[in-house]
Length: 236
Image (cartoon, rainbow, N blue to C red; front, side, top):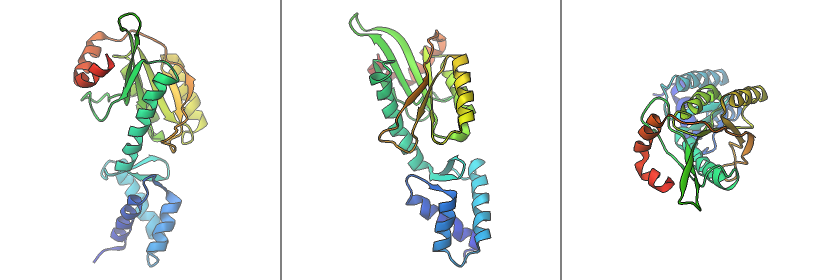
């Protein structure tokens, strides 16, 4: 026989399965209450609190909490991120004019702890033998709880990129954090872009700072390009 906590956990997964855009804490509690009226509300709150702790400690790996009070299945979250990465690749080419070609990269393509850019692109002089001028990388962060980690990854991308952009959610990030990140990006020459996390069809990218060109370390540039040989053919 299931315990009340087991019933609640099962119900959480059932609700999340039907919420591809995720669900807020209050709404999650209300749905559980309506579907499990026999369960004490305090037990619901307590079970969700324990559930969230396990998510944060990576003991539960198929659910994420990308911002405070918002729960979503991992499979839905990264599906949206793929769409946003494609949209940002187009934005780099068509709006910012930073790239002549840009593509999204998926998963851990660079095979190390420093992470793989969500988007990588090149800028070439097309009329003069396609001379390569710059490599541009972007870190797209949909999780407002991971801003420091994402900034660190963006800094690491400067090892193999001439320009780097950090892309963060506008509505889900508090103003003080945005202002601090903007100052840091100016100091380190990283471009900062805001976007609407909840509108995958039109993320409404908004530029705060442009990336400043710097020379990459060509040892790392050659190293990482070997991991994306097929994509590199398209870029170069």
